[in-house]
Image (cartoon, rainbow, N blue to C red):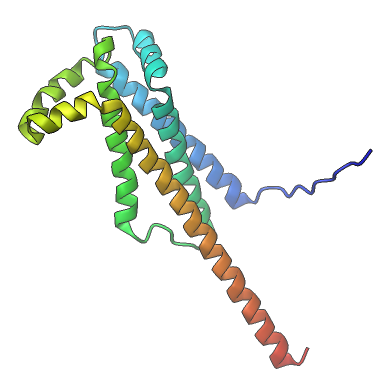
Length: 188
């Protein structure tokens, strides 16, 4: 019998702190979503409204919470290592915009089920803001569009992870080059 030993390294303080931040922000994101459902659904009990929201929009709620939590973790972890990943405000803004867009559209799918009745009032303004055709498309395709918004949120988390990975790889290469120069200068 062959046993495979794995070497486990404990998480650094920075990693633990960043992970905790990501979990807290992701949890808050999901709770805010559910709180909006409860507040905008006065005709149903809070438990019923939350049950309907979790049944219909589980993927959007969990995906958004995970995406925002991951972005928070990556940003905090990178910052703890001295990396500035959020130096491009348009990228961070696009990730936030995707979150808002996805959440906004996901509420529309709850309206026919008796949830989020206050959103009917918001829906009534869509034709005056976007025009009739676009408003109909937003309402009719709210579920697929909310998944597109979710894809944007998760995509930006992935891009942020790649930026951090590239930054750390560049630092490693730079440190190795410096080490080689020091050895050459010192004659070792």
